[in-house]
Length: 557
Image (cartoon, rainbow, N blue to C red; front, side, top):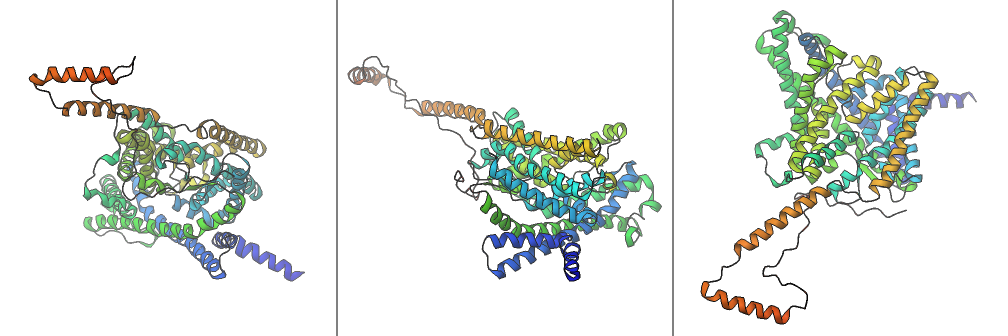
């Protein structure tokens, strides 16, 4: 029996407790369910494992590039400066909580499949990296509150499973407004920002035309490349903060900012500025490595999860990553990114003047990765219900959310709140803060409160699905009605303006002929019109050229 105990110990300690291996095993199980060949199963599992390791490597690069910047911000302002980057904080937490995160993620996905199978919330969350991010957040919050590993996995898994089916449901009316049917849902934990953006579009964009009716300068389209946008923005942030720090601390101190972790101090002003530029570029490289790792995992995990879900939840609606909506309004993506970033800057100013001095909140710098992905998607949601104004206002509010919410979240992350990075998307902020504060109610009381919060969220999502989503409510119906009326009035005016004017000599005869014709042909009791009234044509936001054609809605089952 000793060999059996040794084998079990080896499997638990050396394989199942290693998240990269565990992700590979999950992928293999899903590919087997899809009846793939042995070679495809092995290749997919290995690629998923390598993708997870790439995320860890990229996170290390992010942390090293953010180190000097955090010191500069703290030295220049006296506050704690944080740049939200999901991949970075997840990579930091993996060293301490990796095994618990993996088990929590497995349990959460299983709970979500059961809820999708036996409740009206038939959404299967296929954004694997966001499942990983939320599992990591829940593990960090629950573990730092003193709960056992078993308690962390069970409570966190139940909460994760509820989130995976509830959040796509809450956003689905706005998602259907974008795609035009029920074929896909949004599976991204920036959902609160998207709902706010869609609702803001309804309020401010009744008369506003779509962003796709205008052309943006070709010179700005390079910002659609997230790696370029991230690197450029970080270079600007680094250079500006380095100059502010130089003016505040003096050359002797500022030039040593890059000497930490084996780096070399700047020799002169030019070298100091160029080291700032290099650190910003290295951040862009680090994010590119992480995103490559995420894409590598997704390329294998998504089919694997589809294989598992297809066996358990026939006819489910797949919930996909935020960029799935980008092709439907490409101009709105760039507008949303810029508006969200401006919202982040305005919120940073408010934190500096009010939030930090009065409440002790950390300064949250606008992180380009969350602002690009969530801001771009928020722009699409705002445009769907409010056109250009909706895209701008909705994305701006998203930028406010993803600045203030991470600042509140840091209060419940324990020692991780002192890192130079944190989670960047809206749902991590509001849900993590709620759960973190609930956990402070004690071991038993806190668990009861957290599970009660999860039950309320699940019940609200089911009610919303039945009363709002399933009834076909369209959040842009009022705007459509207004645009139809505008189009009808314009068409009528156009028809009247191009009608030929009869000459004076023929007016009388034409009138007599028309009257005679009307009298002989018009039925009794009806009025004949001299000018035909155009039929109003419904106005829809058409997807731009190259947008994907959504798959047909799933069959009921």
